[in-house]
Amino acid sequence: HFTLANNHVTDQGQRGIEETRLNLSDLDISFSGCPDGEVGDCSFTIKEVAGKKIGLAAFSMVYHLFDQTQAQEIIANLREETDFMIVNVHWGSEYTHQFSNVQQNVGHGLIDAGADVIIGHHPHVVQGMEIYKDKPIFYSLGNFIFDQYFSPDTQEEMGVGVSYNTSDKTYTLYLLPMTSIASQPQLMTDEIKQNFLQKYLDWSEVEEAYQNQILNAKISL
Picture 1 (cartoon, rainbow, N blue to C red):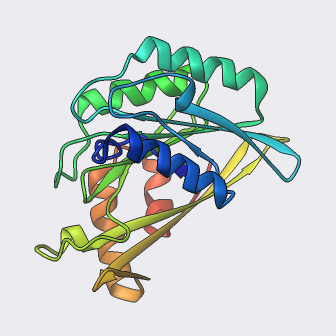
Picture 2: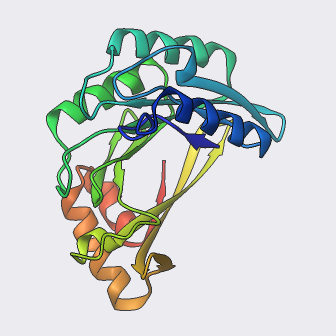
């Protein structure tokens, strides 16, 4: 699945958007997300995985705030039709590890509406996480494949594994710190990994019960 909600999807105009959607469809890659600040039918899709219906929504709020009421209505409606709800949000200040009150308020609203996990991006660096009402919000995973070589922070990134048990609604979250070498990501190991996880904990807002789990890169909810 590919999220198209970001501040660059319109760089090649409407034709670029249409060609992107067509190319993804031809490759059998599902997608969701409207241009920055927009909410509509393009914001979401439902995908069946292993007999379960997964709701996939995406929003962007870089230059313009999206209509939170409309977005929450979409999430609430998808909640009734799906077994699990993943929301991507393109947000936050560039090169800042601390997430903002604006991000937090929007994230909480989407969880309240029915999102099961929120995955954020845009700042080009990793931001911390939060567990709100027993559901995770990853405020920014940082870059993945990118040519920003001007600072170590822009070459540190996170992958996230989410295992969700639909029967008892429990999560296992796997944190996958990575570093980028000439735009090629590789997993961190040993002391480098532990140092990064300590920074990640410092950027996060979590209860004490989860702090050691973050340092062990595995969280159970």
